[in-house]
Image 1 (cartoon, rainbow, N blue to C red):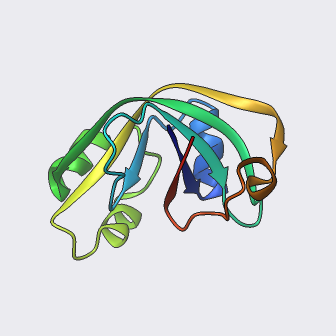
Image 2 (spheres, rainbow, N blue to C red):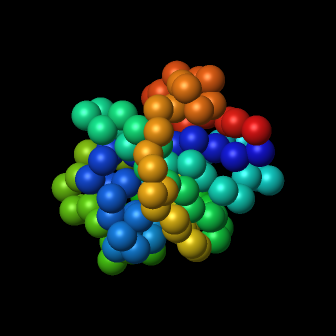
Length: 123
């Protein structure tokens, strides 16, 4: 089983360029067996553009999470604080290996699912 993550195009590109090695999330999938993530670049791209392997998922108090990820998440402190506003803890997915697909594709045609707001499980 895999997960499709909906990621803003600017951050999806940074992941697939190797710049961004932590993907921040307010919530995380419950299935701990997930090892691979399909990258769906949200609007205006609206395409599946690659994938990455999960090294580990960390869950920390917000200030600790910032200290852990600030040099590798490609976001400013202002963005981070706004994103995690009113949250006590947050998640970061540590990216191990990434792969950009040569040919991008439509999520519904390939997987038969609509673009997820956050994530979707797929076989």
